[in-house]
Length: 307
Image (cartoon, rainbow, N blue to C red; front, side):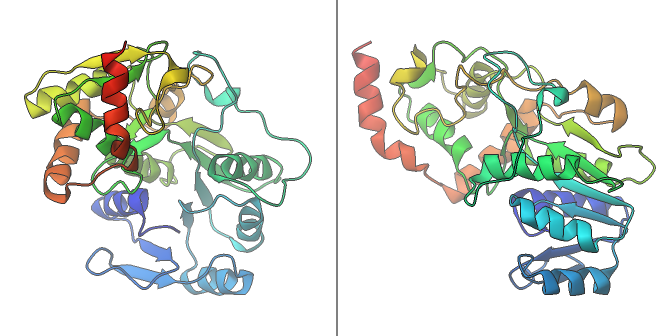
């Protein structure tokens, strides 16, 4: 579910490469030329969800689109296969520079409020899963994911600033911390690994990300690939203009992920940053996307000149 999305396409391609019969699902009609099988339905309509699961009878259900806890409960009522793989996000509390381990997530208490943003919705989804007895769930937890066609354009924010030759504002407190970033192909790979019924992953969560890559490393890697200098300009995090550094890192958050559990249980290993940037830059050169925060570039340059 969510198979036509950013991570979903990468996951479907990796599953099909492995010879797995893969059926993508989403609300819209089938995207041309991407999948061997596609089912369109509205997952928020429980009757449609029940019919789609009865029609396809999946052994494994990979869910990339859910961030509302009632939708998790609907899946649990109707999915009868071997494994439900839920793709989450950075659900951790403020860790103030400590790298996040899977056990740092603490299920929430009570019942969810009526309105939830993406991150809080994922936290509540994981909370609901933790309360379901005998339900075969596995969780993949990626941080910020980049790659070609990233609709958030966060990676483009850094490419644009490096490419224009001006200073790139970064948070002085954290730009050398491990950053919470991952390549879309790696997360598609992790999803495929989690779907493998030969791996014992029941009721476990797995961090999946780059290892040891800081914001400095990311920006300097972009600069090397473009053949230009990296002009990092550290300033206090609180003084960063909106959109200047969309990956943060916010000093209140954790310093990246510990991925040892995914490495041990799944066989996950992140790719080289250079490979991820080469593919992403190839897309950027053709598509020429612009991050919304780049509209304030003059403010950033003035701020850099005054510091």
